[in-house]
Amino acid sequence: MMASPELDTCGMGLQPVPSRPSVAVTFGMLGDLRYISHHDELRMLARALVRARWPVAFSQGFNPRPRIVLPLPRPVGVSSSCELAIVELEPPAPHDPNATGERAPGEAMRLESGSASLPALAGASRSGATRDDGGGAGLGGPTLQALVGQLRAALPQGCPLVCVHPHASRKSPQPLRMWYTLELDETDVARVCARVAPLLAQSSVVVLRDAGPGRTPQPGDIRPNVETLSLSGSQLEIGLRFADQRTARPTELLEALDLPAETYAHRMHRRRVEWNMDVTGDQKSPQLQVRDTLGYEESQSQENQQGLEGQAAASR
Image (tube, rainbow, N blue to C red; front, side, top):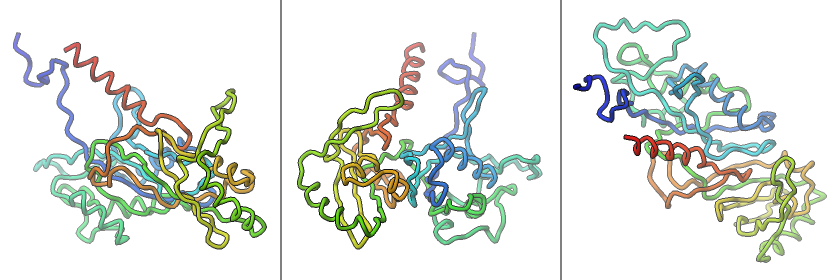
């Protein structure tokens, strides 16, 4: 029997999924927002995108979720001015000359054919534009400049929108290095200053690593992860790198410097992250499988997905 023209050529009975554009959103987590968890941060960002009426893509199934990825989850209690989220958007809608341009109440806006290109989003975020003088393009859909302004207004206090860029790569960025700052009490400056040089001179710095709830802490060497330590006045600059698929936790640095975590853990501020690609998809180094600062495999879900795709291909 001849296959229906509506079915795909793989025999799965599915229409080809159009390629979805993605954007890289950089934002801050300051003040009391530093204390919310990774999952709450995702929910906060998803709700802000919905309020801003971004055309966010959702997963399929009975429990659809917004397609948002945080490549480097932030440890609870650490503030940041360089949080990165990769947001997948619905593809541009084809132009329909018979459409009225009206949307149902609460329906998310959708990028229309002929609206501003993705690179315009970056310029809009840097310039602080909140709306486009020409209004929406095509059938009344928003320009990307307008979406940036709407997101900036929808984010809560303590979550500034830093910039938005197009993300051309289908791979998620992975961190290579990151930098923290820590403001010290005046009474601790001399003691930390005396410990910095000896710590950097050591070939090994062993700390007890938290293995998770109900597990016994295990010793681990964080010296390969510590790239720079410098003190300017009362501000400590910390540079970390990913090595052997992991990096040091901020609390482990505090332990190595003999600083009490209850006093300093919430003062850690992540100010910069270097990724293995830029947000337009230009590769800077080979793709690495790395763990976040909590030591979990960030690529596990990608491996599972690849395994499922391989099984589906074999069955065909």
